[in-house]
Amino acid sequence: MKVLLTGANGQVGRCTQDVYAGSDHELKALGRDALDISDAAAVAQTVKAFCPDVIINAAAYTAVDKAESEPELAYAINVAGPANLADAAAEVNALLIHISTDYVFDGTAHTPYSEGDETNPQGVYGQTKLDGEREVQRRCNRHIILRTAWVFSEYGNNFVKTMLRLGKERNELGVVADQVGCPTYAGDIATACLAIARRVVDGNECYGTYHYAGDLAVSWHAFACAIFEEANNSGLISAKPAVNAITTADYPTPAARPAYSVMTGEKLANDFGVPACDWRNALRGVLGKLA
Ligand SMILES: NC(=O)c1ccc[n+]([C@@H]2O[C@H](COP(=O)([O-])OP(=O)(O)OC[C@H]3O[C@@H](n4cnc5c(N)ncnc54)[C@H](OP(=O)(O)O)[C@@H]3O)[C@@H](O)[C@H]2O)c1
Image 1 (spheres, rainbow, N blue to C red):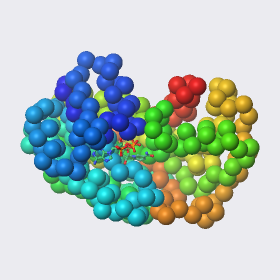
Image 2: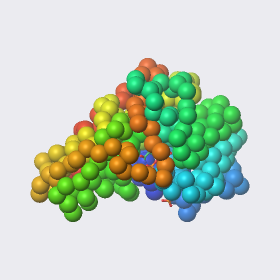
Image 3: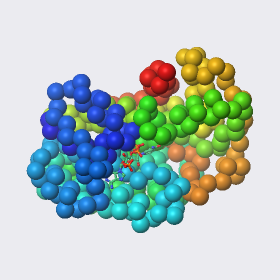
Image 4: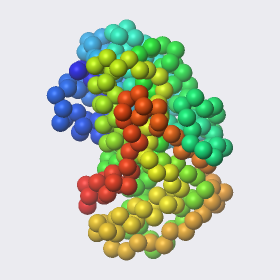
């Protein structure tokens, strides 16, 4: 299987490279410097030259707050980028796996979101990700849109690394307790993408939008407590800081975030045999790698 990966230096991108390193598939991993997905001509030319079976788009504008003041750039990367990839994938009949987000929802639900539930993004980032999904749906029949959430890994910047830094610097900190979601390890997303790609290439012709996230919903506060618990157990921090529960109103940010963005992964489990991932176990693994 020939796989073209975009955004190869991000969290999901780096983990995808790790996952494919242990497989017999041919992976062409391109970071932003090698392929800017907002450049339509470059995307078309790269895809035509490599002629992949599968394209995994892990490239995105992911700065949720900054997007509020950079909507054009967020649009170019999160809408025009996937549109370019979808056109190029359709041209060579490749499967396009495009990663999206729980932030397409407004968070007013009280039970886990299904793929068909109404979307209503609360900020520029979520809106551009939703518009990107629509471009993919419109332009490329053979697509999988994989919505995920609260991504962490040993790579790049993420909540786990921020908490570890703060845990070393402070004895006490406040973390938002009224936003609930599902932490997800980037390595598990990469593994899920590989499993999906294999199944589709082997003839499981299921396409469309799917949810894939950690199996246990928590608040940022509970996630922070779990991080400090595991980090203390593994010796990464010498003492657990006090973690105070604060509200979203106590911690204003430029972009509004959904209060509840839990997603059910039943459809992916049914169609592809890929169950929701165990983020607690993955967290232990990431902390081990960071130790
Ligand atoms: N992070 C989360 O909590 C989260 C939650 C839900 C969904 N997601 C989705 O999951 C996917 C992967 O996220 P991630 O956490 O791996 O993001 P990430 O670590 O921020 O990686 C994104 C990568 O995309 C690259 N990129 C930006 N603009 C590009 C362009 N024009 N052309 C090519 N590459 C470009 C970035 O390069 P530079 O570093 O050079 O900018 C970066 O390496 C994204 O679709 C994101 O929307 C993420």
